[in-house]
Every structure is written in structure tokens, then in C-alpha cells.
Amino acid sequence: MQQQDHLFFVLIFIGTKANKNRNDPAKQGFPSPWQHGSKLVRSFRAPHFEAKAGELVALTGPSGCGKSTLLNLISGLRRSEKGEVVVSGVDLKNLTPAELDRHRGANCGMIFQTFHLLAPFTATENVALGLRFGARNHKNPNKRAVEVLKRVGLGDRLDARPDQLSVGQRQRVAIARAIAGDAPILLADEPTGALDPQTGWEIFSLLKEIAEEDNRTLLLVTHDPSMAKKMPKSFDCSELVGSAKNILGEEVSEL
Image (cartoon, rainbow, N blue to C red; front, side, top):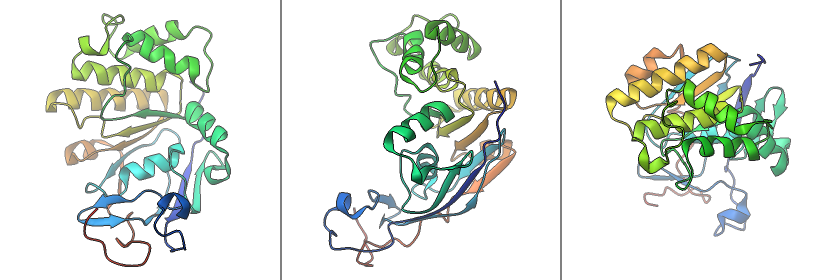
């Protein structure tokens, strides 16, 4: 895979002012609120955060502190109102929705806790579909799907559907799908959260090995301190969430 210099610089302030559309978050330009402890949060900010090509970074902190939001900002699934989210010299805030789609397809391989596999399709088909509709065009998606499935240890399960696979095997399919398009950035949002400890460590080791071998940037959200310690770099996200107030500046105790 061609090596590139992927540098993130994130300085984000979201949802800090009230306006007349206070009863309609969609019209306010605010992100949807999320839970942080017992508070309803509409404010998120990130200090200077960066990750260079080939860096492996653990994102840590309590539930609701903004770890997933940070990944969503880098992938373009969530927009910032202020500040910058720069990937390879491009500020994502300036991109159109279509350009953000291309950014995700070309630059980001995403791995989730819940796999997001399509039930009617085989492991090979699940991986190949992403190549057919993604930003990176492969002349032979099925061939590439078989290659990456073999790499993640599923060479003997190519024709199995998700319901015929173990939970750990499903996550391996999801990893294969994320790496198939040669995306230089892997965004893993608690990829071991639904797995038993042994399988979780196997998946963690596989992700880390692939990122190191391919010089990919890996940003991995984890609640496991022992896994975080195995990563060369970690970033504590506990300070990402701003004041837990609604748009009127009032404390909110319940969703």
C-alpha cells in the first residue's frame, strides 16, 4: 500500500450558542444531544489532537466523553461548527456531502462494535459490496475480498453468511471489509466490546498487526486499560465534552 502522510489536526467547538430555533435541534445547526453521565450534552470541544501516518492511538475515557464523536468528526459523519478537522491537508468542514462520502470511501476504514454485516450475503459478498460502491474502484472486488478474508483468517469461511459465523468471525469480516479498499486510516469504535475476553484480544492483536504491517493510522476506542497500554500512543478523551447544558445555558439532568 502506498504510504502517505495523514496528519489530523482537530480543534472543535460545537453547539455553544442558543438561537430562536431552540425547540428544533435540526434547525439550530447543533449536533444531536448525547448522554454524559446524567447530563444532556450539546457542547463538544477537542484540544489539539493529531495522528500521523502509521501511528496507533488508543482513545480512552468514560462512556459519553466524546470518543465516538471524535471518530465521526474525522470520518465526516459529523460536522463541526467551528475549528478545524484536517485530514491530509483538507479541512473537512469545507467539503460538500458528496465530497465527504468520497473522503470516507478513500481514506477511512471503519470498524464498529456491532459489525453491520448484511445478513443475506456471504462473507465474500459483504466485503466485495463495499468495494463495488466505495470511492476506490477495484477491477475484481470478489478477488480482493477473498484476499483480505484469507488475511484475517477466514479463508475457510468465504461462503458463510453472518448467521453461520461466530461473533469473533463476524468481526473479522468487518475488519476485512475495512481494509479491503486500502484506506490509510482505520477508525475502530470499541471493536472488542461485544466479544469475550479471549476473542477480544485476538481481534485487537489482528487490528494492531495489520496497521503496523501496512503503515496505516489506527485510532482505536477502548475501555480496556490493558489494551490501551499495548498501543504506542493514547489520548484521554475525558475532557472533550464541554459544559453539560442545554442551549439556554440551563443544567439538564435527564434525556
